[in-house]
Length: 377
Ligand SMILES: [Zn+2]
Image (cartoon, rainbow, N blue to C red; front, side, top):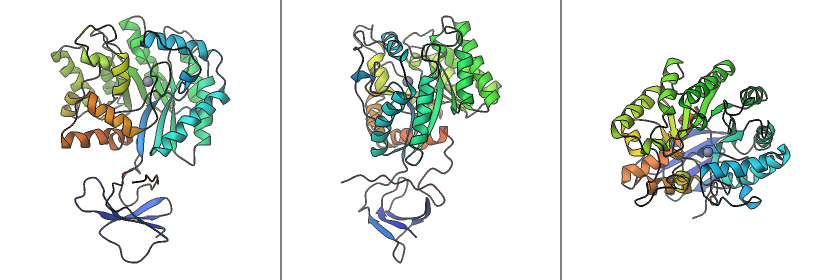
């Protein structure tokens, strides 16, 4: 065997184990192996986990905070406006270089899978998508990347965007994005979702939308997304990020929607720290947290994940691509502090996210992929 990691703590196992690696795969996990491997590492009882999974990162916007004017109101609409100013002059090579800086730090912090969102629309055309496809190519030996073709200005609000989305998918984007809540009317939000499903079924791809990212209790596109997912037989192939309006729903309606989300097998990416900063801006005290109902979703068996979303951009001036930091913020925001809840938080940046991305070779078990990121004591 090429590598033996001795005395490793693995989640779900009471006693430390040895992990054997041959080539790119784990071949054995169990009590102390005899003999010596080509390389030996003594983990000294430290935790060994599969690589972290970041299911939602706007790498095309990352680090724009270095070059753009600040977001004075701190709101989403102003962030979108600022980004649009810059997006007109996007260049794929520049986008790829900026994304690379963030991806590199992400890998150094243990993330081995990224789902990157690329704005696609009439303002920036296909330039962001082409930049992130370049980054995907350049990082193929370091980590796995999916690129989402994401209509940041809407589809009905931005005539021409649907055709560009189709083109981005033909050029190699992996996932169909969406932003239904951003359309002008409820009817158009539903039409937006229909268009995304049309593209997804035509290209045979999964869907990941940003849904109901508002404090408005009447923002209810998640309900229609769940119905559509069930009717199209897309169970398990749809993810929805944010869904912060869920916090403003009445309890009866929230329970109904959460049940539909569970039945549709929709993954919810709650990027808690971003909502904590952007949501409930116009509340007086007490201010809401403005995040989706994490504990209620977990209790109903919804696959909940948490992702970095933004790194120093007009939406969020902080952040580094570190899924442990994301998990820490999630634990605070959703008040997940009891021992079994802390396990649930780690699931959100590992197994739950891997499940949503169909990473079948993921985990610490024989036959699974062996990515290696080591941290000091
Ligand atoms: Zn986002």
